[in-house]
Length: 529
Image (cartoon, rainbow, N blue to C red; front, top):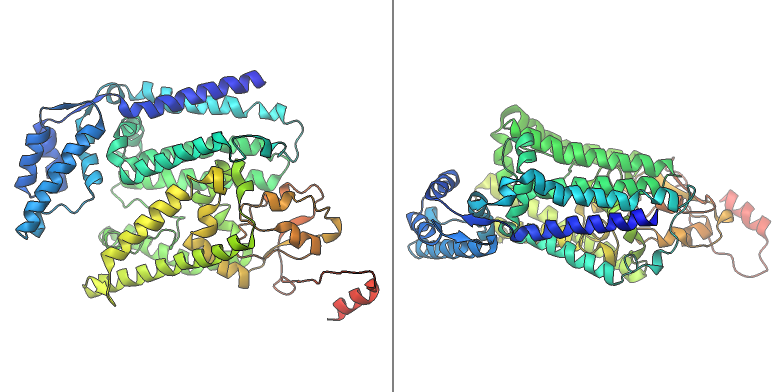
């Protein structure tokens, strides 16, 4: 079985290496016809830009997208400078340079990736999936009978912040930096998935289609690992299946199919303020101009945020969303499961968590208030805060860096719920409801606790679960996402996820010290109080 695992690891690394090397394959050559098509699709009115792009690009062959992108961005900046000097604002291209460059590079691509996407898919995604499964499936035998399986997790470089963990971090961070800020550099990946994209939405793949497809692929593959590791726990099996369903169907397939039907692509499970651009001007315009379906999406988004979310949290806690529905949580629970033990349990981390996550929530609400005021009033600022500035700032700092680069890229070092714990504004909103008005709690049986510490070690939200269990206190922390891993790894059945009446939900207890305590008097006093 170990031979199969090592073979799988080799196959996986081969697929990953080809996937990475594919960024440097093929070539790029722009024809005048392709350039004319692009400028027409973009509605570009600048003759200066058209001329500069023609002079710099048409008829020239580039070996990589990086080289071609440099020429495109230089032409764009020079043309914009001319129009800004003449105050010809209608001719300025305001799109981000690398996003603008992506469209041209996409049209100019040629070679093995564009001509043989099926073969390249097998050599990248195919080998990656096959290798990962061969590495994971033998665990069904190697791990032995169903039960708690966390042996040796601090003895491995990959799961104890060793060299392998740091290499994974570097790769993930690099991936997110390219995806968010240099989309034109990863255009080769889109060629591999063009056939699948055309089948789903009728158009060619964008960098976001690549991300969505890769997201689903990783979740499905790592879910197999979850099924094997936690096969003794039905809650984990069902929960894993749930997040897979909502990610693949709601977050990926439905928006792509809606796009193919000329509808606005919408993820019906993504609630505001996690869906922070729901009230941006471009989205409101798109929805209001899309007829009945657009109006339905607008109403659904508001109802989901203001009614469905708090009602569901009241009955089931924030776990119904964070651990059963959310795609961010789904990736954290599959790809991030090997790193959950790295969640910081210190008091300093808890204080930082409360300040940071609620600050992001306030930031998102202020941004939305400014955006809506400017949208309906026709102005560009509210109380001195410019709408475009605050949207760009939030998108850059929170949407890209915090949620993506740090939130996922730092799994191997900081744990798998960095974003959910410290940054997600929806988690903050859900947590406030859960803390003060929810039937959900994790009950503890202090008499059965042997203080092994498994629960605290593997709590991805940094909760010292053992401290509650030792005192027999219910766990009602606003940060708890109800993943149930603390219960799954407890060898004594001390912890239980429950929904019950509000009365008695908070049950603080005193710590008994010394030998002069009359236990019967203490218990009777507790009952009478």
